[in-house]
Length: 248
Ligand SMILES: O=C(O)CCC(=O)C(=O)O
Ligand SMILES: [Fe+2]
Image 1 (cartoon, rainbow, N blue to C red):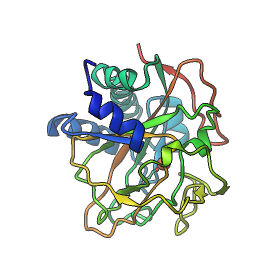
Image 2: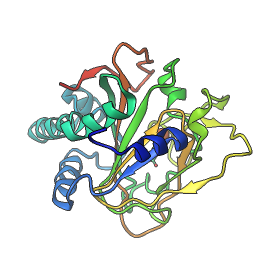
Image 3: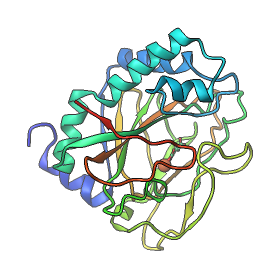
Image 4: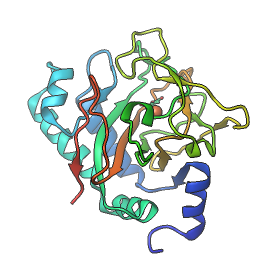
């Protein structure tokens, strides 16, 4: 193995997640952070597929076209980051494509700050029958349970897509919890995730996870990119408009 160790490979497939510390420098993470702030809506609603100008425009018609274009380029470059793609292809032993990008700001003094996601599996939306979708999360500041961080149920990645109580994702109404809440088999134990700005969290599409409300004074920007091996099927989604993006 060239880009990850055998232990990291084993840890990922056993637990359903892997944290790569200091993947980006603080400066690199801040550059992405600024770019995503430049295209934010006034109310800081999460944005999907910011790598596609037409998608940003649909969600934020007030956005400056120059910012939209510049940020789309930075998001797409991050999606295709060669160092991350090498790590991911080593983990999955397949050629990959990206299918979605997402920024959840949980911005201070915005109506979305308190949005805590239900325990869910991302694959309940994506519906890849071979359970091969996954995501990479980049915290754009330090993220912990106090400022709306994530929790996971290690090992739950070995489950198929579980029965759910359906709920909207990013289009959930303010005051209601987003995410297709799934039943959690009782033998899994909840684990809080602590991430530093610049880290990368890789997590399996069937890993049960959710998040806390942001009760801090700061914002909680988490940038999420979804991936799937090429030739695998997925749902584009009612509103998500997922689309296969080649990485090379
Ligand atoms: O940003 C969060 O708090 C969770 C987001 C999430 O899990 C998702 O978009 O699937
Ligand atoms: Fe999720």
